[in-house]
Image (cartoon, rainbow, N blue to C red; front, top):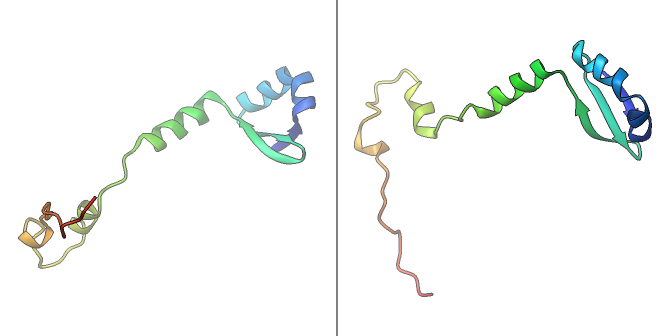
Length: 88
């Protein structure tokens, strides 16, 4: 992974794009701190696919464990009644 400042990134953008296209992650810094990363299209698409995957709910996660508990049991049913009365 290479690192370059914003000013140098502006002047050498075509070279940095070539680096990113070849699979190198190029970190662009501002005032010495990482601000952005230039990556290949393939890496960006892979990241989008991973981010697009939904995280399973707790119930779905619990259903994966092999136990003697029936996941459709009333214990796992969501209670939608309010827990207490409130004044607004």
